[in-house]
Amino acid sequence: MIDITLLGTSALVPLPDRALTAVALTCAGHTILFDCGEGTQAAARKAGVSLMKADLIALTHYHGDHIFGLPGLLQTMCCLNRTEPLYITGPAGLKEELAPILKLAGWTTYEIVPLPFPEEGLRLETLAKGWPSEAKLTAFSTEHRVPSQGYCFTLDRAGKFMPEKAKALGVPMNQWGLLQKGRSVQAGETVICPDQVLGEPRKGLKFVFTGDTAACPALINAAADADLLVSEATYGENEQAELAVDHGHMNFAQAASIAAQAKVKRLWLAHYSQMIEDPAAYLPNAAAFFPDAVCGEDGMRLSLRFESE
Image 1 (cartoon, rainbow, N blue to C red):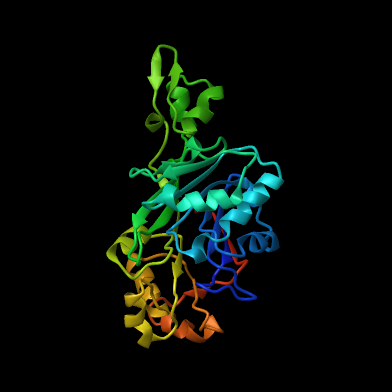
Image 2 (cartoon, rainbow, N blue to C red):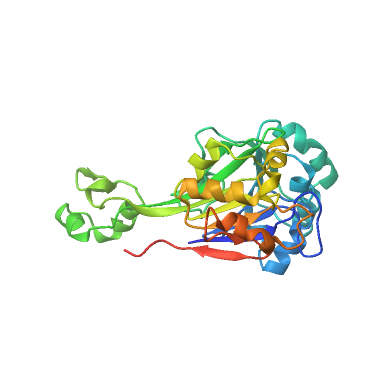
């Protein structure tokens, strides 16, 4: 199961009911924070999300409305005596962009580890014990005015375990759990591999967060068949399409068109310009392309669960 919580849905300027961009993903008691705009701490507290459980902060780019919440959050973690390492990743220029932020945060009780994002993706279990071995984070390039990337979190699901095959192969019952977790075991003098006792892989879970971006093929590819896409939708009016492209953003219709092309299950719009007082007023522009589009609100939460057997 994956819990997704929108912590901030505003772009550039925080509003009384909209903090700046941040999304929390929690799985197996561990958390990834995507971006950390101003107001993230207060929004997380209000939503009941513990950022002390965050192992990784994944930044999409280094504009202020996506990172200015970091110094305060890092200080708070220190005040609460965090001891576990905290990893921070992002696109090109990570260490240079983090340097002034870390200077502002000052000394901490825990290690802050800048982590250049690996091209092959990141297995979360390598950061902290307790993450499912199937949990993986990948990044994809987006089109903004500065180096930027979106993120795709996947939680794969192995095939159904077939005890009759395990018994026939002589695997002791106390080793069945290892096979179900994808590990080979020894049965007498024979090594038994998971694929010998598991059925075809079942559908896993997929969450995609765009960050700031214009519509682009990379986003369509990354979001393909996602269970939930949280997409920037800076502008509401259809007539603002060219403006959105010029600034490396999307309007409601462009975001919804991407979701439709990617065949996602759910679309949450976010990252609204301060000019948008009521996002719902522009929802028909998105619904024309993706009928089930939803205007994201701070504190909105969804639990993604595996499909039934």
